[in-house]
Length: 89
Image 1 (cartoon, helix red, strand yellow):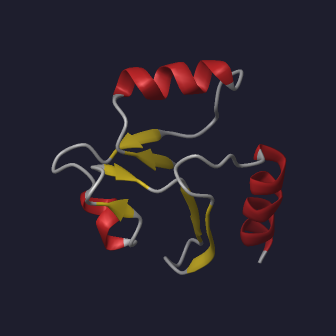
Image 2 (tube, helix red, strand yellow; image 1 turned 90 degrees about the vertical axis):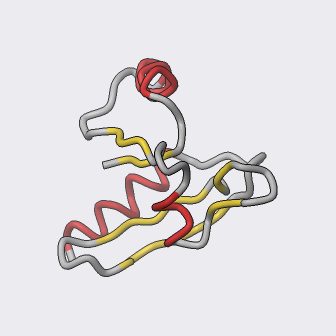
Image 3 (cartoon, helix red, strand yellow; image 1 turned 45 degrees about the vertical axis):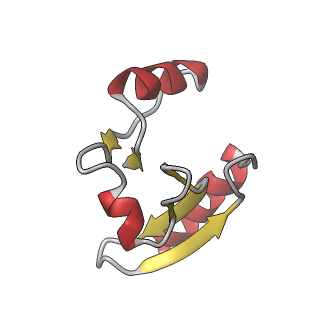
């Protein structure tokens, strides 16, 4: 699943821009950023989250975490490879 503080409409637009996604997109919307705060990626002074990816295995263990800052970009192919590693292991 994907989680962000963005609205459902933002999630819909993002999914469309990717050609669709096969996983649920959840909102960390109210209270805003509550989940992000627990992972240490909410930037309180800006009211946004850091652009970060956290991959958690089925047992709830964080297996991958990386921040690229709010202005950074992530490579979807690299993230898919990381997710596949976690899924196999």
